[in-house]
Length: 219
Picture 1 (cartoon, rainbow, N blue to C red):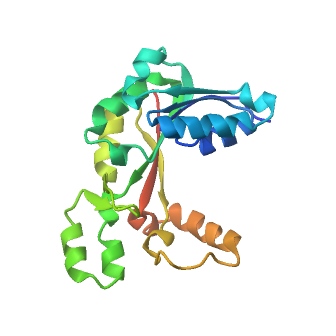
Picture 2 (picture 1 turned 90 degrees about the horizontal axis):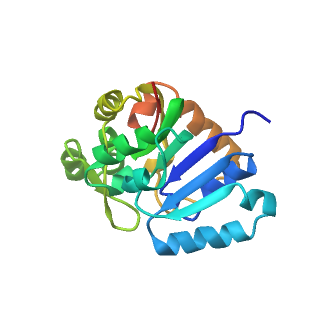
């Protein structure tokens, strides 16, 4: 097994990501604001063997208040996946998370890609929707909620400004984000995942992915 990392998972939800990391041997702290999600995460954690449970700590709180709970530089990896899209002003959150990353550590972001908002309506034949989406900074998700979207160039500048410059970035859901919602799961899921993984690290495909995964390294 490789190095065991101290991981902060902001917006941990039901704990799926945190548990996977704990099973891999890492020490994980999950922060989640929604009480229902915290309860679900605790229930999932309770079903794990003691060795896994001992590697996970769950904190109910706002990701913008990490400075209240933790000392600067406390974590080797800070994950903020699927959170920025629900935050109106993300810069203070990101600055606070960067302070939690130890020197040489990783800040990992998963965000909605504002540069690809026209893809879904365009491929669906909604030409007016596509035209409106070019300059948009939000879209409605599968639950009908409006979620923010970010542009790669903007987040790159933000990461530079908070001392965690962009090291690498990938596209996520290059093909599947624009697929019809009622398309059945493929018989060969492995092939689908391989195609997505290849497209997600290959230009020009990654630039039109529904989501972007950005990795910044703390200086």
